[in-house]
Length: 407
Image (cartoon, rainbow, N blue to C red):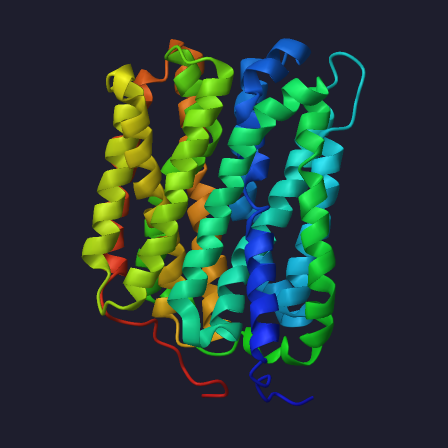
């Protein structure tokens, strides 16, 4: 089989690929934000216990870590685009299962089953996207990194801002959650011609020959930056709306505040990778985003309620930039697409697996104390950790990589 790289696509083909990447990314966080947006209504309708709510908000982020190492293996055998298509089909199924009606008292079963399937699907998509950007958008790494991470933030904003109104319109929380399967299926349909076009070129770029990223300090710095970033990021997706509602905001307003915060994430995630790609060192940029994120979250919990729009705005800008920068480090510190997907699997496997502990700890703090206030210490620690390892990851160096076939 030929291992020659694919021919450069025409402008129309390139644009179609870019649109597909963005549309896929627009579906990768609604699982998290849609559930938390109507969590009180789900609890009231089902009698879901506190431990059940904690499990359902923690499991998706944990699964991102559990299934992330599987993605490079599947991509080596099937190609990154095929894995991406399969992930979308799996995500569609998971979102449908999550909304299946069951007798009273049994809501936990489809909620958990659908969440597990959906979390596994998102893990696969998360890992292959940086490799696709490295492979098919080499001349526009900063732009495409910014676009797809911005779309991921947009996905969270859509889930946070539209699920509560959807519940009011349809009158059933299951249907309000299940509606999110429709745009996933549309994105999957658009990927079909892309997968057909990339069959012959998928295997070479996902080779696992050469030096393992596990032996690289640079890869570990990126991974630990992701660990601390994920602690704040997924805690925000799962608990920011309940935190604001505990502080006195009604459901619709809390969802709107979270949605606006995530829209500001989009601004941060769009600008930060473009700026980072033009810099030799991203250390100061990474650290600044981490400090802004941690500080914004602490103020959202303890700052004067009159300033909630400002606090959540700071959180949004910082979080969007920090998330995008962590993912952009994969492409900037890797010399090839096959190293990018291996680093992505390592970074997201450990990063999300360990980072999901933030969501769990926050839920446990609330269950034990009846308040989210003490969790501010967690946000301070995660912000500091992200700043330290973001500084190290941002230094001007790449992951050492032996040439394919080297002895």
